[in-house]
Image (cartoon, rainbow, N blue to C red; front, side, top):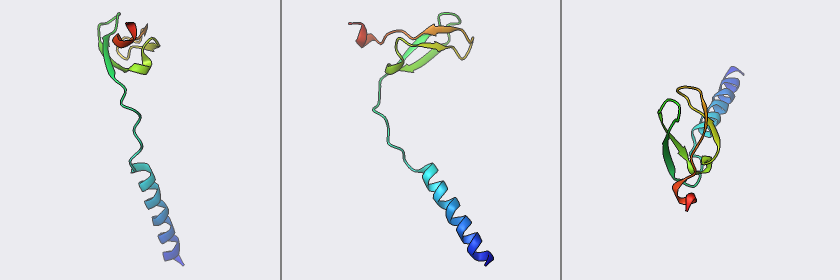
Length: 74
């Protein structure tokens, strides 16, 4: 009886590990842009979909807006 319970637990753990570590489908590889925080000049990177949105600098905790991507300015 005990071996049935242990086998069941091992199966559940195995399936959980597989689901956690399986390859997830990648989003489209959006371009990554770089900017500097206007307050502390820390170099930051962001994806194209974040352009024009507000963010908080992880260094100085000040709020700023990511610049519009160069291709969208034209």
